Image 1 (tube, helix red, strand yellow):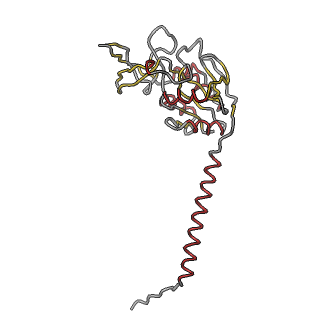
Image 2 (cartoon, helix red, strand yellow; image 1 turned 45 degrees about the vertical axis):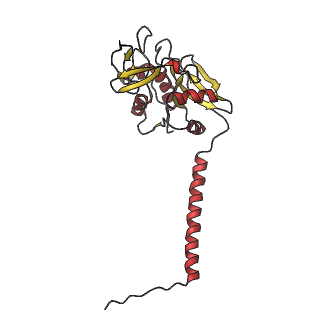
Image 3 (tube, helix red, strand yellow; image 1 turned 90 degrees about the vertical axis):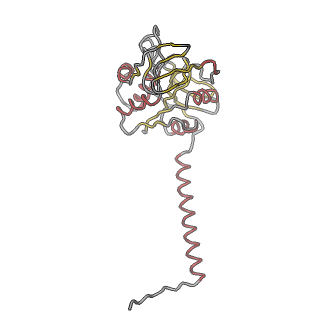
Length: 243
């Protein structure tokens, strides 16, 4: 025969235990939310001191690798734009035009065209190959947050991390007429010849600040609303370092 014993708890004691557990759970949630809020606190303004590098005259189409060089040098990695230009993955699909359609490479797969001259066709490269190259220099420390909200850029800047982005050379939203459709081995892609890359270094209520490799200007500024629209239009591409 097996003896079974029961611990009897009166109703008031039982309700007190349940209430205590609910309070503990609520307090835990509040604590977690508090930590999250502290982590994501945005500063009113930020301006970081990242090195400025001019892509010209060596790399007329090398804004992306030049901006990456600025980001890596900010993290004390000794690498220059010319080294990155050699190492960046290339998409060597040849340019052709048939029946009004353009057939070429995909900047999501690698750099397109000639980075060293404007005499032939070319364009640039998007975030995936750039992030892959950056990862070789800082394994496990590259954050590719492409597709996030613009507030995430501010969050990283508030934590002293400059941000590599794809935008356009006007730093404001472009009309649809500025875009072309390319047919590539990995599918169609919409591109603009105004595509550009910069390293974002700060912001305030009115402006976004960035190092522009095309002009060699440090902490150049543009209206923050215009800049955000141009960034979103180009796919919200953004990379930083986990410093």
